[in-house]
Image (cartoon, rainbow, N blue to C red; front, side, top):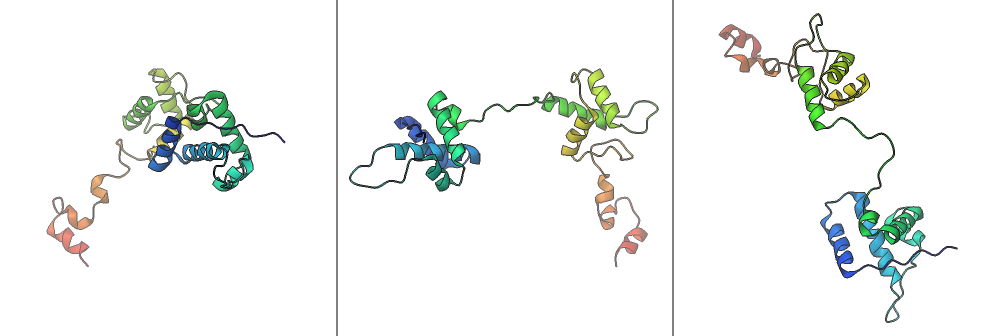
Length: 192
């Protein structure tokens, strides 16, 4: 059976890991990796004074932290090969990176809130995608991607008027608060 590599942490690294776990402000994955390294380093040190320590195996550390032995093994290997920051951080993910940044998203929403092209009553997803490319906000964007971006903001293309809100502010107010626009007769009808 292959033995797990021994983890030796400097005093600064150990302190950094303890602070990371204590603060609790980082993601759960980073905290779990920090705990893996702390347990592996603690169990790599030989026992002193006759104290018995649990095994240093990936399996036992994984059982203690409720992760797989393979996860423990990967964190250890990354620490030995590339250091502390590589062991704690995320590796780059495969796949196509996003090409739409926050500025382009804002321009998309601004465009969707504007008047539709002549001869159209409202914007379609394909029209928005084509206009984004034509205006040079992005090299290419699909109508599906436009839908995802607009869905994040609860934007509704099917509304009857242009603007950022789904309903007018007046329509969402209770009837009795519209007295500035109504007569006493309207207020009497709304009171039960």
